[in-house]
Image (cartoon, rainbow over all chains, first blue to last red; front, side, top):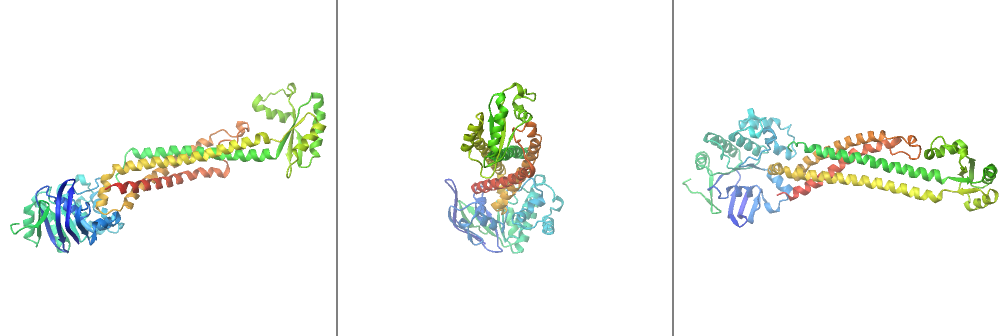
Length: 225
Length: 280
């Protein structure tokens, strides 16, 4: 799946990550927590090739990220679903078109997948908003749409960067339940969040590994979490 | 890609303007080619004998010159131009009401060559003996410079066409680069969901190819209309062959829109892939 071995990343002179070793086993559920600015998003970006580690190695689906050509990286990204912190929608396209974007760019026939697309939107509760534009959606609706787009290609790994950052508790629970459902289907899930309440709620339902990012390194969180 | 505003019309307008100029450059090239061929063909097979003699001698010397010409090997025919024909030749310069009898205009004899032609030096010698006032002009003196000038004009026309297409490619490249830069956010999102550079480039290539072809189509139609409205060769007194198209050559400008589309395709694709390689 995704492996980091003594990976490090620096923004200029600032070392954000140091000697991070991490392995996301198939079907596992992980939380990555830490204070704001600890490097959670940076670590997630290493996990889908948006950044290249300065030191150590990062393997994406068995391939060294440094050896991937741009086209090869594109192909890997089609198999890793990412829920970005800022959702990354195209505001001139409807939610349906945004969710279908991975299908379009991979050359699949969007028309032929229309039924699957509708079912997916219904699953995340966005059927009534299928034709709305991203700026017209609430925070929770945007996160659910981002989740739908992340899983439309049936990836084996789902990475979510602060998926509950801009939503209320009720919506957080709803998003969490969707992710838990995906994990039950065998997907590997990694959620970067500083929401300890969310982590505790998840641990009550699933055997989740909690990784704490402190001073640039990752440690397994103790039983207090 | 997001819809663009008025800038789309700038690309269309530029392509239309370039195509408009291209049609005229093409017309110039074809017209000068016709002119070159016409001068080469007509003048190569004809000569003129000019009889400059006092009025009392003119008829006699004309008859003597005709006799020499008709007995010269390589001369297919020789014919003295009538007063009306000479008047028509001089009309473009002196006007229609030319008092020929009041002017000392030499009698002209039109000579048409046959086969490999005649011996010019030998003919001059015979004319000097039989009709001293007869001067042979075999047109070589001024035929070559005219043909060279026409050929150069034709080359300039084709070079102009090439420059116009190159300018179109440059303008489309600049427009495509600008569009790519303005859509960097869209490109980033597409890459994050797994789009390859070829997919992203295709969106721009399609858009700019269509704009180039559409603009070029408009410009070509307008230019063909303008060319059709130009005065005809006979209205210009036959001095020019006419800057325009004739017969099947009217189909040639129709190649400009697809050519512009091809230029747009190549220029945008190259610009897009180059820019995408540089984008993180």
